[in-house]
Length: 270
Image 1 (cartoon, rainbow, N blue to C red):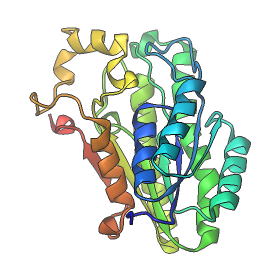
Image 2: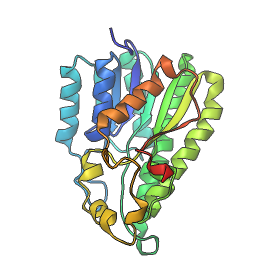
Image 3: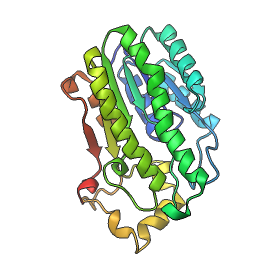
């Protein structure tokens, strides 16, 4: 018996890293998975390896190997019609929609006054507008289902404490924090809880495989802004983020909504 037997979760950005881990953890607890990932290059200005179609296929294989059911498609969160169709097909296949994990995101690095137009608009379009499109596709279905549910919007510590060399990323993540707050108030009458999650560094290719991140962290002009309180634990494991998400979706968190939930080694307080 799993904690989420018979439940259905929609997760964006599932090809690898945190998204894949969330999908696996939900599947092991009995949930069926609806998921998408662009599974390809996102923008020329990112400085970490993009996910691939093979990564997405591996997520499907791992979920099914764990005994889970999954409907996963290659697509872009910026495409509202695609997301609406995916959600509709997933609900038809699995019988409903209980949870949404808004996980897909992109990161770029540059000084605010040196960013290209693409570095700013791509990040806002994917991280913030894409997140709204995910919610636009999912919330009407959840409300119509009438069974309540839980939404976790994955923001960042950069949505609580602005970070240097990350103007578009910080702006997008602060935007997600506000979006989650608004939705929490709007969805409460339908017994849908909404919380934002705020990780710091996570052991994924986007988290530790980014050459520009390494440069920023050691740059003496900016390094003082990056430390956390926990030098002995500088990088979170994806399971720590999944633990928080599964908790926020569980009945143990039935009284928690509108919260900014940090998993940040105290970084936002430094």
